[in-house]
Image 1: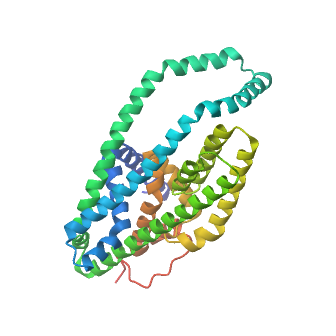
Image 2 (image 1 turned 90 degrees about the vertical axis):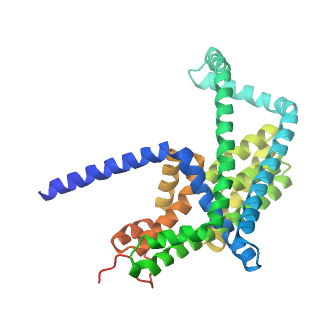
Image 3 (image 1 turned 45 degrees about the vertical axis):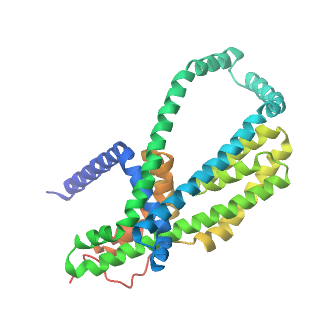
Length: 356
């Protein structure tokens, strides 16, 4: 076989492999997304579980305590957001009176500067109204699916924590005897990297929520609590999450107040917060736990969104960090680790698959 044909066959096989892998991941989302989310969250509370077990708490009880801890924290976030949304809805009439003149000015500008006319806007509104039934049905189906996945995730967390030793031994037993200690090292390092990243992001979200809340409260922005919490939670999505949080803040804050002071306050607050995050929080709080190249990180986030949506964007970075750890310790895959990583990583340990 000529060299050209080898390249052609290899490229074709790679393209087909990526296509079928992506298609399979999309189809397997209902099964894999809750399971992978549970794995990441279980790693997050693993140190707490170990501490409880050192205090002679039975493993089953420790696993249940940590599962309930995650559950009640998540319910608390949902309750806080629900309360703020109810407050926003209660003030909607007042906000509508403030914002309607601005909307009318915007419509006039659109009519004057674009080919669109009032009949086009009315047509879009009537089509949207006609599809409300389908949208409501789609929302109910989505809510039902989310509720099932939400509860299933916590069931997975309990079993992953309770039987974690068995799962670890399973992965070790998959490899030859001389490589077992290196496999154990890979599992340990992958766990530490994921925990470091998640803890750093959690602390970062708390700091950002405080900065957002103080800044927008100083400028008199209404609904600053829900805006701060949502924007801080969205920061877990690298790069894209901050942009989405900023747009949500402008929408909720400006609609509620309807004046330029709120808009200026939101812009200033987010600008200061992003400066502090980029030059203080990210380097010293999150650090380079996952050691991923920024360009590769953006590609991973975009691919995660295309495959699994929002949950794919959130899981993309810790999953890619674990994959990078595996690549670093397997000699034939080290070039891919160099591609994914943010520079060469010095390895003191031996590598699985190393030539003898």
